[in-house]
Image (cartoon, rainbow, N blue to C red; front, side, top):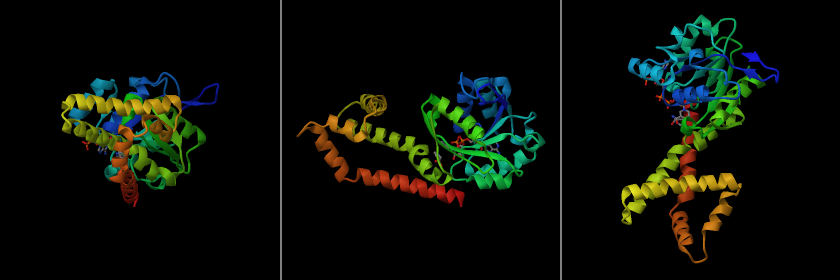
Length: 286
Ligand SMILES: NC(=O)C1=CN([C@@H]2O[C@H](COP(=O)(O)OP(=O)(O)OC[C@H]3O[C@@H](n4cnc5c(N)ncnc54)[C@H](OP(=O)(O)O)[C@@H]3O)[C@@H](O)[C@H]2O)C=CC1
Ligand SMILES: O=C(O)[C@@H]1CCC=N1
C-alpha cells in the first residue's frame, strides 16, 4: 500500500477469495470506486479465487479480473486479501492462503474477512504472526451501493487498515466501526436484515393479493412502500416513531392496522429473529 499526501493509504492491488454473492459485491464496489483507497484499483490489479470453473469464467467475463481456482494459485503479491468464503470452509481457504508464499511472506497483505461468526483471533492463529486482520459484516445491498457494514479491527490491524476497509465499504453504503463483541449483533441486525425486510415485503404483497390486488400490483406497492419509508427517514432525519405517527390519523386505518400488527406479536417476532441470528452467529464462532 502507498501513502498519499493526506497520509491515507491507497491500495494498488487486491485479491478476493470466494467470488460468490459477497465476493462479487466487493469486486463490483472496488472496481467502481472513483474515490477513497481503492480508487486506483482496476481489473488488471485484481485476482479472484473460486473453485468453480464455470463460475470463474463468468466472474472473469463480468469484471475483467484474473481468476484462479484457489488462494494457493494466486501468482502475485497484493495489498489486500478479502476472505469471502462460507465460515464452514474458511479453514481450508486459510490453509490455501498459507500455502502461498506471495500472501504470507515477509510483506503480508491486509486481510479483510466478511465471514459470519469467526473472530479475528481465529484468523490470527491460522495466519503467520503479525497478520493484520479486519473483520467486516456487510449485507447484500452492498451490490447496489446501499450496503450497511459493521467492522472491527484485529489485534495487529492499524488505524490505517481500518480506514482502508472502511473506505471500500463506505463507497458502497455505510460503514460503522464497532468493538468485536458487537459483531454478532451487527450480523443479526444488518447482515441478515435484508432477508427480514424481504420477508416483510412478501407478507405485505401476499396480504394485498388476499384482498384481491393482482400479485404484481401488490408487489410493486409493497416494495415501493418499504423503499419510500426508509428513504423518508433517511432524507428527513426523522425517528421512525415520529414518521409512523405522521401516517396515523385519529380513528383511521393505520391505527387499526398497527394495533393488529402489534397485538399479534410483530415486535416480538423481530426480537426473536434478531436473537436467533445473534445466537447462530455465536455458534458459528464456537
Ligand atoms: N450472503 C450474505 O448476505 C452475507 C454473507 N456474509 C458472509 O460472506 C461469506 C460468503 O457468503 P456468500 O457470498 O453468501 O457465499 P457464496 O456461497 O455465494 O460464495 C462463496 C464462494 O466461495 C467459494 N469457495 C468455497 N471454497 C473456496 C475456497 N477454498 N477458495 C476460494 N473460494 C471458495 C464458493 O464456491 P462453491 O460454491 O463452488 O463452493 C462460492 O463461490 C460467508 O462467510 C458469509 O457468512 C456476510 C454478510 C452477508
Ligand atoms: O446467513 C448468513 O449466515 C450470512 C451472514 C449474514 C447474512 N448471511
